[in-house]
Length: 289
Image (cartoon, rainbow, N blue to C red):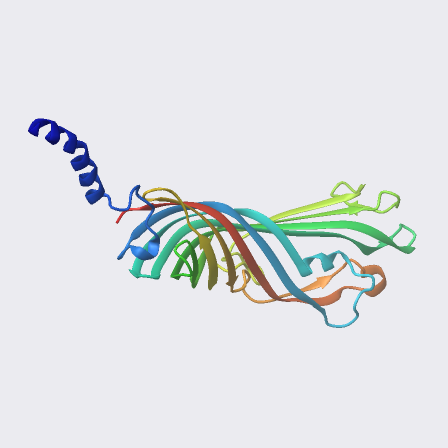
């Protein structure tokens, strides 16, 4: 009878021991805020939506309707972004994040504008010109931010960011004359062509007025959401906004020749170019401590 009782108690002792070792049942993912000073590494990739604007000021006559130069007042576009990051916990709800990445900034604009068309006999008439431009710049992105946890999964970051230009800025322009007109752009062979395409690559050291900036400083504000995949592994979508200094050194003084036959070359200044970006990325984060 004594051995029978001992065998009957054996399963109870095993269950009691399991309950002592794991009193809460199955393991759960530990929130970031419950770790003392966690260190996490992340790899992020996504897209950058970019928006530019500047003023175009004429010193004298303002052409009406606007010429093809008017498209350079603004632009927008989407380009890729990727980064490696580290998050160091410094308090229950605070941490420091550092990132090193690649960001492409690309923007463009298009529209139908007006220009003067002069025939061989000196007669001038307006003509519609389909106009488009595209600018692309590649940057090394370096950032630091303070992280604050709103909840165990939702957090905010704010901090400085620096963009270093890689290579040169590439700009393309395309102008197409209304096919119903007899006008065109004179080519090197003396013939007229309905399409004019211009390509240029400009670096910070090139001898041009107001070359691109070699580096840009600014601030970045972000919000991220942590989705646990397994212990020590998280999926983190992040939305960030960037406000940085101008991608161009100074303002551009030039002339508008599109209405030359009737108004002459018009002195004009491109002033205050700004570039803003919103980044949407998805990252995989690993806890190493």
